[in-house]
Image 1 (cartoon, rainbow, N blue to C red):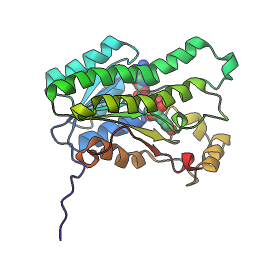
Image 2 (image 1 turned 45 degrees about the vertical axis):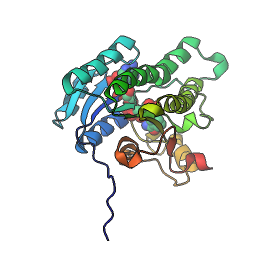
Image 3 (image 1 turned 45 degrees about the horizontal axis):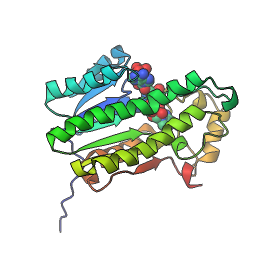
Image 4 (image 1 turned 60 degrees about the vertical axis):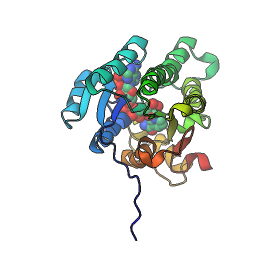
Length: 257
Ligand SMILES: NC(=O)c1ccc[n+]([C@@H]2O[C@H](COP(=O)([O-])OP(=O)(O)OC[C@H]3O[C@@H](n4cnc5c(N)ncnc54)[C@H](OP(=O)(O)O)[C@@H]3O)[C@@H](O)[C@H]2O)c1
């Protein structure tokens, strides 16, 4: 007996990935393109994006600073003008605050992190949803939160990161509720620790950072970037058509403790 499943192909889909110049967004751009999507890979470091685009003929370099609302709407407009539609959005660009006790944290720094990690995700999701509603073909929006959107960042004092990523989890639920009638699914992925530019300080030698990761992760190790591919493709493809409003922790058991 053979059973037909929807699979993970994304042929003819158009995707926008923010934070594509390094780390998770770089990997996600390649994975989505490899599965058939045309990918608008967005970030500020355009040289990195052009290098990425040279690895796959379905990847387009798209300079965009997500702290600027106009650049976000221009990004959506460009994807529609060139490719006709937008079907998948990965809100992945992110930053973090320096470890600082909240009573001493600069409010401007707090706002900067929340602006990139949460507010910009709202602006892009909203611009993309306007287009998806006109298209009447649904869509998938995936917000990259963090385990620190589900539990405190302690012992690292990072109020802005934890608040922004936690806000993104409930923004995900709210947008899913508002746009379900348009068949726009909104979900989040909450990664544990993966080695990227953002986390590189944790991975230096056999330092306290790595010991902290191993001690707090049920599987006793950091994640490998390719271990995020399956959850990404599940949420982006027709294999995930009945999943919305959810946050999937991909954290080696960090939040199960
Ligand atoms: N690595 C982990 O362990 C981990 C765990 C949980 C969650 N996450 C989340 O995963 C996402 C990706 O992080 P990563 O680990 O892959 O780190 P990364 O390698 O440092 O990537 C961050 C990306 O965000 C982009 N970015 C930052 N500010 C931007 C802005 N104003 N406009 C446009 N792009 C901007 C950067 O590109 P440019 O500098 O070129 O603009 C870069 O491509 C983040 O949201 C992060 O919070 C990561």
